Length: 331
Image 1 (cartoon, rainbow, N blue to C red):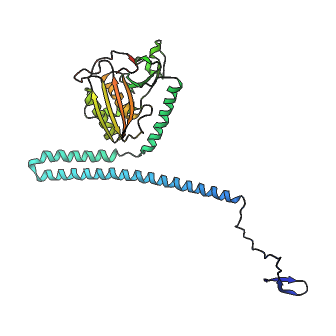
Image 2: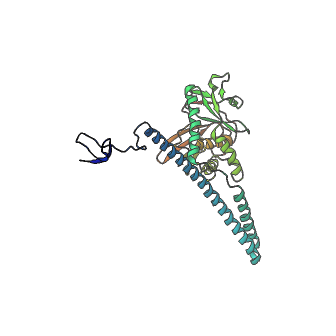
Image 3: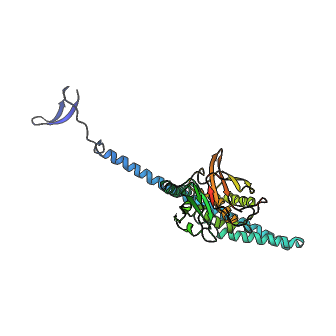
């Protein structure tokens, strides 16, 4: 039996006996509610978690940018230190003074460039790949809905910007349009064989930067030109981890194996690595360049084929493109 305090009209305050059928009253808990507030609490927790993750991502990006800027500044300090040491040593060692002064000037000049040319913003490879993927998918969808061929021809159009256009023909047997016709996105000249679409290639702006950074001028021989373009993909633009080249100038073919591409497996429309190499060859040889890509173990290959007098048996570039008519499957 359980006793609890109760008020009785006749006896006042006294113990009250509970029978077996009576249930003790439970104290009410204002916070205990199994009603509709539970989902609201779950939603609030989810929102809070997303906000925390977003804040953490922003913090990590800012930290990454600070680390990269710190690395550039340390490199600038190291170059400045080496330059100062070389200049100081020039006063102590007259026999090699000229060499030390040159080294000191190079170190100090390199320090200034490194310090003031440090990028203020760093874009991760994942972000760049996603942006490129959206654009590539859109262009591929346009060509597919128009019923165009699975051909990618990079055509030089002169010294403008970009210096080449990416032409996708409508017919299986096609002719490469002239530069004026390629200025339009939808290429519809009088000749049906020359119809299709033309895009600004991703390699156009990259090639412009390539011409600014390559030592001297771009090579004229196809073999050396492909090597320069491949090296820029790895060293300058960092859009690939490694690139291997195989060039046959006599037959007008260059095959490049790409490892660790920053923009995926190379099977998307106008892959930047293949686009840069194709644009460079088209401009350097002044000839249309057709591009094919294939997946291989550890990466993918990009095969470029050019037509006309782009190269002779010695691998020297020059001349106009003689064969405007290109049949599907010809090499």
